[in-house]
Length: 160
Length: 287
Image (tube, rainbow over all chains, first blue to last red; front, side, top):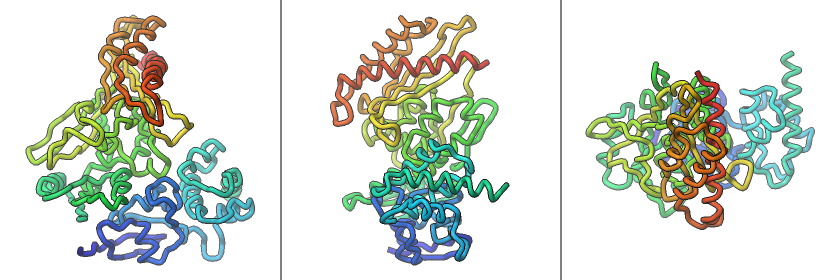
């Protein structure tokens, strides 16, 4: 099977790669580009552990073909912090202990970032519904919701 | 598997028509990529339609909305004029899956996946939506209810694909609504879904109606007796009783872990009653 050449943008950088027709974006990120932040939980779009942002919308990278990334703009967890400076969501996840084993965390952070990008002041209900496609088997979700609320407050304060 | 991303719909239909084995259209991929995880599934040729002009756009004209086949459901709720015109369809489309799925899933894909429980389909059928189908022999418009033929089966011929879903702009004093029953609060498959569209005459009586039922048969049911039960009425309790009874009678469901035959029939009536009330309320405020 011949490979497909793809030109895309990942975390602001131009990236080119070769992939197979049936290879998912998640597999490309992890196996070809060494970006191991997105995790494979279910592989069928149910758990959100592989969440990445494509052209401003949060997607399950396990349900996107690597070839579909051609000409798109992809954001992954690796691009979230600014150098050594954590994104407010990352800091608040640590502060609120919104993670235990951490497998779901990159996906939650990307999904939460996509929420705050479009809705900087979400209600608790907004957060819970938006994050319903991200599963966490450790925290019981409450700490995650509090961390997102707190990050939204902090980011709002920083803008004021 | 072979992946192609044609730039024109003519190229897309030629690819699909010329495929020797399996061929699939890729829009949002939320069903197709899940099937591809199964080792026994051979996708064959996958034709990604997103590079074709217009496929990812909602176009509003004087008398219609044309929703490109690759427009993600999330984009429907961001289109204020579409939300104002067809709130029931937008609500139904937004019930599908998680935020991540909403970013990719499409109403045309929901239709072509041909699941009896597809949420957007009864809403589109109630609204009288049409699918614009393009194939090697040209373009044809088909009523949405004529596309699904049974679980996983559609009336599309080899080489054909849906280019867009077309919704005419609603007239005055009309409204639509969609409700479904699921045992959870979100992210579940409809046990029963009901779409209702109705229009009132100047005196406030129901002049026209369309009622569609999902997940109560092998394909979506356009319940004509149910619509007839409310036409000419002020949608009073007697009319709603007749509507509910006609909906229950129109069901031909299966027993499964999500609901029994008896339960589905009863809930179809209950939801039809509630959806009709919402559609009626919306019709009352639309001039």
